[in-house]
Length: 434
Ligand code: UGA
Image (cartoon, rainbow, N blue to C red; front, top):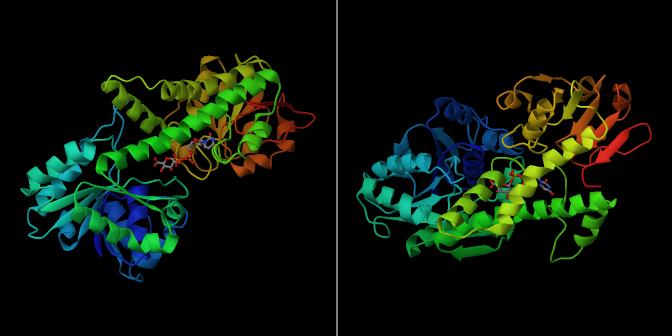
């Protein structure tokens, strides 16, 4: 099929490249000429494992030609289906800001006015229930001067892609959710996903757009709450002198609980869990419902950096101390620091009068935008040398290999927020929940 994908962030580029790999002809539309040039030269504009190979294979001079990029919205006219993969940032009250989606839908709708045939538009971005039906579809209808369900159809297909493993998550989904409010859009969605479903033998959930939107929020809210619950239990374990990881390993054997997302520690960050939980809480409150468990999940998450700092303060007088912060990315395998737990940890250290030397293998440049007055080291060993204490915030593998580097500290105190450092004699070691 002929597909267009609007937006070339990590979701849009991944979706476009993977569909090209599955045999579709794909054009990726983005307003940024540099991003477009990058894709057309065979290089992805975002860092994602497996993406360089796919973009090189399908775009660029030596590619199969199944993937190209353009800034020209008219390219959608030669396609059957368009995916909207645009950002949905957060407003101050936690609700989502649909303005970029609306602007994209406005341009897309105006472009579709020139298409005499049917066109299906699929919303891929994470949007609160009702956004597709009540906001995006009316914009498309007004701009294209067509009637939804007659001249064009709209679907909603949430993404479950983790940053860092987005390609693998796309090609090996545990489910494909196809939300549509009319039969023709649903048929188009089935046809687009047929090669993926056949290859991955993935279960398909067919539903309406509102339910599809809610499935995405429920998925992320459940996972975030699961981590907060294991953190809550982990905090109890710490108080009682019990290793929460031993407890998590045991309860994870129960299929009803499952072994994944039971790593307790300094909490969840990133561009998805914090934003999505806040948005669904805000949406619930607008309807007059207080989602107590999700609010508690946020509260526990916000408390974990403080618990880490108070464990450190039990061993180090933080006023005037120099503390090494190991890890800035919100999780390993990415340079993304958005909502990283490193941010409240660093600010908390500074509020207590400490100076901070931080190290991250890839996220240093991005971190500069979020925290000021931090000295950045080019290696963990440099950050640790002569430091009065250290905290581990991101579970990068290379931190597990650190050993004698701790002996070079002025005082070898390590508070581990991710259970990566080996407890041993000669180090004053505190695990956050063990
Ligand atoms: C998350 C979801 O896992 C994806 O399914 C979803 O598609 C994506 O959000 C999205 O909405 O776009 P992501 O934010 O990339 O993906 O990262 P995760 O791997 O889920 O980790 C999120 C946070 O939870 C990280 O800070 C990580 O350190 C933390 N975490 C994860 C824990 O503290 N403990 C765990 O056991 C697992």
